[in-house]
Amino acid sequence: MRKILFFPLLPVRDKEIKVRTRLFIAFLLLMVLASTFQSKYDDKVNYFSEQNTFVILPPAKSLRILSFGYRNLVADMIFIWSIQFYSSYYFSNRYDYLEHVFNTITDLTPLYRAPYIVGAWIMALEANDYKMAIRLLQKGSDAIRDEYLFDYEAAFYAFQELEDYALAEKLFKRASKRPNAPALIKRSWAHLVYMRDNLQFAWQLWMDIYKNARTITEKDSSFNHLYQIKYEMDKKNLEEKAARYKKKYGMYPSNLEALLRVGLIKAIPKDFTGIDYTYNPAAGKIKARKAYRWKKSS
Image 1 (cartoon, one colour):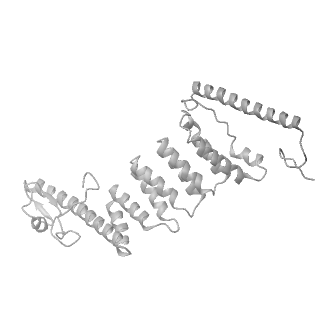
Image 2: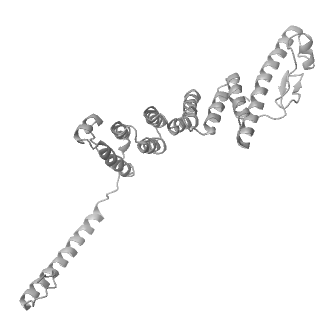
């Protein structure tokens, strides 16, 4: 007949019951004693005080061999551990290993998207190392050719945090060429081209967006940029010609028609909506009805 632990179906002698009872009481006393000692020890030790740590993580080449064909599983385990590790803020030197950890994970599984994104977040938002984040995101971009997000996030860091407009423009351009890249990315690229004062190329990009706009947002954004770009190009041209006029005649022209009469311009330009610019003959300066302050000089 089957017996159930502590509740046998057969009769149990009183002596055996007493032994078991004593053992159970002793176990309870032992647990209480252990809890007391543990509580006193915990009061003396601050587990979460700032401390240094040391991480030994073999290179991906070695881990591929040691994984015996299960490198995806190994990469998952290291990735899960890394999230826990970088949530342990009491490790004061945890960022010393940051790039190595996520390079190892992504070397093991180059097509695993999550480590690129999460690793870049930790590098940028916690470690404040935007260059490191950009390196990891560009590594992801090189490995996964159909993903635009890596270049887009890297471009945002380059633009917003590093103010490296040349790099940001390059990254926005790469992102805009990826399959299924949203229209926002091309607008971001075109805006960076404008911000770098490449007005002719910016005009071409924004004109293409304007002609192919599918939403009100695209239409309005491209219209505003085209208005501003044309104004800046016309302003530069007219003010340079007014300065040349002053150099030759000793004073700024009284109106823009004077530039036309002496052959310095072939036509008097208007703004993108067809409205005349305002001209100040005392200073030789041009103004439009509105100006977008995307640049300090605009």
